[in-house]
Length: 478
Ligand code: ADP
Image (cartoon, rainbow, N blue to C red; front, side, top):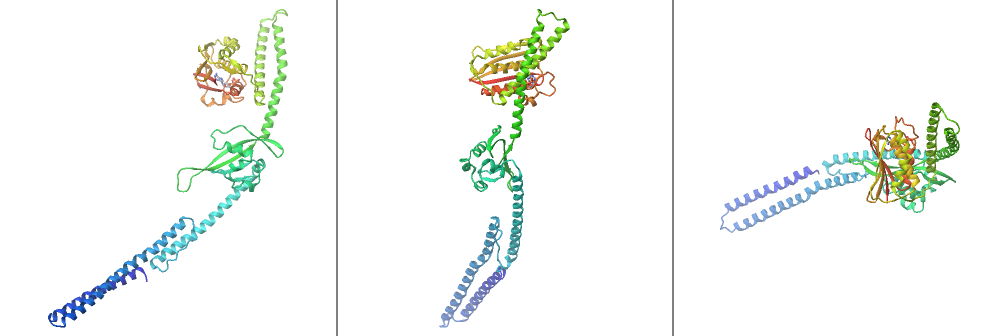
């Protein structure tokens, strides 16, 4: 029986009882009024009427109570079952089915629910197959890549790893998948080095030297953080990292061959250049014979070119020293003014030639530095030489030192052409020259300067604006 019928039956029964109760009361009342109140028949008639009224009254109350108890239950139960079913679906239990056949009104709802659950189950199955297929493709791609690749989730558990990574890590796939990288790192030096840098904004950019497969290899490590926007959300969530190692052994070998080549050539060039310089000196000696004006001009030009050649070979040799890690520092306590004086003296001829006015700014009190004076003097000389070259004739240049708390600064400022902010980083790269630079040069001076300063634990920076000049500052902690 459906709820509607139950309701009609209940109300019908109740109404019928009430009607009968009213009719009975009226009939009894009539019997009572027809009977003489003092007659002996009146009392039993009254009792009978009261009994019947009580029976029908009690029956009415019972029916009402039964209806109250049964009706809400027959509505609540299927709704509860439906809610539970929906909750199960929300928990991805797509095998849940409802049977509300005995509640006629809910039969259609339960049919629809079951159809929906069936479709969701089918969809889940096909989505899962798709996901598994895609996973297989990704695994095949990752495994076909020779470069080592490792995937970690945000708890640093290993999600995937390719054969290349297994070789360099010297681990087996089954030992590593699903395991905590931190636990594995306790017994694996390479993994420890790899995860140490994870999450660091400015990770180590130096190549990693790895000894695997009986040979030494160099790898450039790349950390790729992975983010995802969960369904229904707008914000990206961090879900893990991919670590990839690019094998740069070949480039490293070529680079080292190039460095050795440059070093040998520069070294070999030094002897003939010195002999040219010597011959020039002899040529200029009036005791050998005087030169006419044209010869003097030619000899001056040969001298300038030879000086430049010597400068370039010197720079190349210095660069190879840095690249091969053969840079040796001999630090000693040095007054900053000694370095400045050296640079000014070394550039005097150039400054006079370009008619540059060099001002020295030096405070009364300043801490001494503990540096390799030869190297730092070379850096300041190079900065001052640049300032002279890249300043218009009759320019003004300030060279000096100052101290801010525990930091001593050496600086060279010019008011020349300045440097476009786009190139402020690149000018410290090897062989980089600002496009359009007409002054001759190798593009090595600032790169070597940076290496020399950083080898002392110092920093070098530039502040410059086009057309307004440049300020190069070197900082050392004292
Ligand atoms: P080089 O001077 O031999 O080219 P550097 O490494 O010393 O090499 O300088 C790199 C480049 O930076 C230069 O080619 C030049 O374009 C730019 N530069 C350096 N110093 C200055 C300066 N004081 N003013 C303008 N440009 C400069």
